[in-house]
Image 1: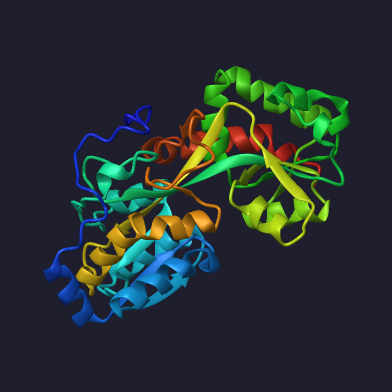
Image 2: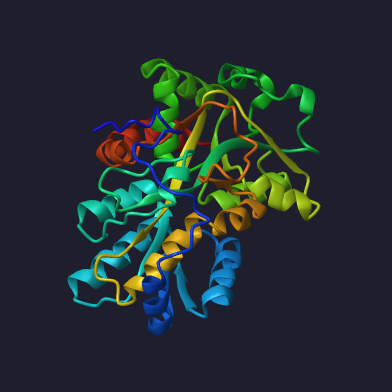
Length: 332
């Protein structure tokens, strides 16, 4: 089922400003609960400022567990089936959120902040909402690649100068499927097959690792690095920078409250804090916030989000295409 992702800036419901104070009853009940447990897939250091600010404001302890997006889903499902209700709040990619929605493990939330999330989506069931956008950018080592030789189109990657210099992340079939659709479907797949055959595309596991390998020079040019990572490494003095090629693909991250959360009020309070007051803190970590009140360098650019439902329904198809045309053709 295709959602109106083309809206990507026009949610179908109204709301009030996020500056509105939270429900006093929710705040009081949340403080009595005293803690909230979060399972998430983002780097803990990137989310810690939000957790710390929330705890400082409300006196509520945030207990967190971080793992891969798949592991977050699996642990949540496993614990629910075992009757163990430990997690309150989930932060994860939207396809994984959609999987939890289909398992009936999330609860619907009506939030006044939703009207401001104009860079993302909130599905009609309201069981998760976009918190940040992981914009896929191309990252390059500034000592290995000259700025003037950067490709302007994906077709430019057929140039022999890129032989043995290109890398991607091994599990990015959602990126690949959405990108090749935008490039004409079979035409896009054929282009990447030709790039892999002519110049090779090495693959690595993990976007953070891939970005670090660009900075080290082992992978001079990576095609699918999250936009927040190069600036973080660049500030540390690493020789890395980034750019985009149209079409620009986006993985949406979201937040949700678990249906059987043991601390439901604290989770609800963190949910609205994450989407409101937490957004500038995430922007300082170079994330692209979903809230329109926080500026983004991608404003004005056409972004193509990965549809969370399509990512699940077409995962096997996209994975097969990605493996047959990119990852299994890797010289690594």
